[in-house]
Image (cartoon, rainbow, N blue to C red; front, side, top):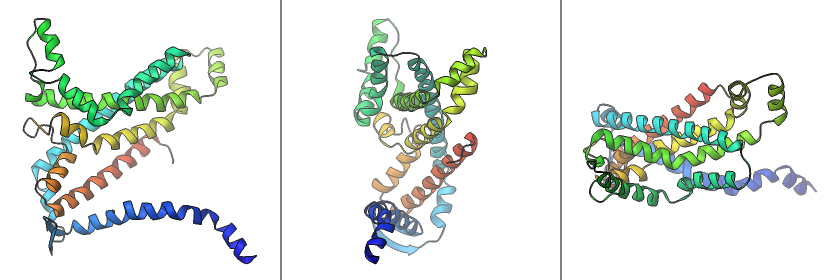
Length: 290
């Protein structure tokens, strides 16, 4: 009887043990190993002497790292902002519609998010290609001069932002739409009876009530874009020069091109801390307790 009571009282713990074991093996242990490696010279997987905080100081004094962080923050914030704004607009529009048209719009909006990131980026690379791309084909048909997007610094950054925003609009749209569907219709009807216009209904009822999906979507998109390696690698490769060399590409280069695993581990720790800062800032700005 005592054994049965113990099992019943701790059943939840026993059921979560497999999941906790996987989390520890896949996330916690590699995290601590990465932190440990960041204090050593670890080139070509040959562990050298401990260097203390020398790796961190070296990275913080490297202008290229600061540029990579700067361009990463720019691309992340702008692309996430565009995704959230357009996602909100589409969600508000779809919320006023029902039937086949609404489902079709949601389906089309979700396609960029659900298709392979690599496939979508390759298609954009082909569309924007300076020689054989679809965009320049139409420009030539219109008698206009072709645009060499990937040979221009500003154009490459804009292209990277556009592609990243394109693939995440559907996600923010669906998340916000789910929040809108959960808004009490009685509140909207009461506001309409009291004479509230569409803008007042949006800003004083709908937006405050959907702040949870907005916050979660913003965090997910920010983390996704900040740590995205596939889109920059395939679309621009960090070029022209180092114009679009986002921090994930710099981390990839250190680890798998130069084999500076000690420095790569150090940069990974810094990127991890920056991710935490992003989450804390969003939670504080939205003034919402999770």
